[in-house]
Image (cartoon, rainbow over all chains, first blue to last red; front, side, top):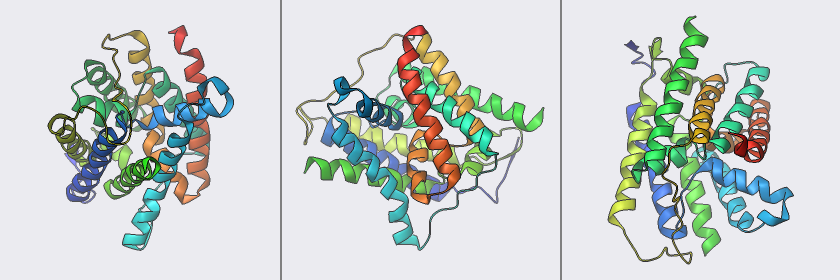
Length: 147
Length: 136
């Protein structure tokens, strides 16, 4: 293992992470629920075609619009959007998106719900989920880059 | 008031994702590449987020939330097959594309075709997954 010191950004990582934690903490204090991106988006999408699932689609939409406004707020403060470099083909990106959607709905959460929120409240399911997705993330990357 | 509070939470979340570097798939890939030129930054994102959220969660206990009737937390504690299979799949997809759900939503602000493709595929996966979850 060798650390890439030129790309390492511990201060902005901590600051950004702190803001994510602040958002999750405030969300819990105000709204009383887990701030999980995949769950909020998934339930919003389900509500858009299933009338039985309508309750709560309004606040979920408001939250999603807030998340999308986040990078624009960054642009207002910093004068430009943060760098976003996609390094893979569109085909692989679509496969990746599909697998992320399937995985987070079947596994009931993602990096925010299981990672930031579940670990903070010491949920054994979230600990298991985080260890699992980190492991398959590391292994998949190893196979893609080194085999 | 309730909408405003929720919007601000989403905004801070999206801003934090932007500041942290999580919106950059190549940075996420560099974090997951332990055997390559490793960029440990995202561990600091997770650490910072976890620390701040845990403070809120454990120190600011209240009988009920400010803008909702009651707290509603997951009650399931059992480790089951959907959890393991779903999390394993998620890690694979995350490594393949370099985006997880929060950043995929925030990335729509870029209006790029890549962000759009990933989001639409992820949304389809979320809908399909919720329908086939009981198979696992």
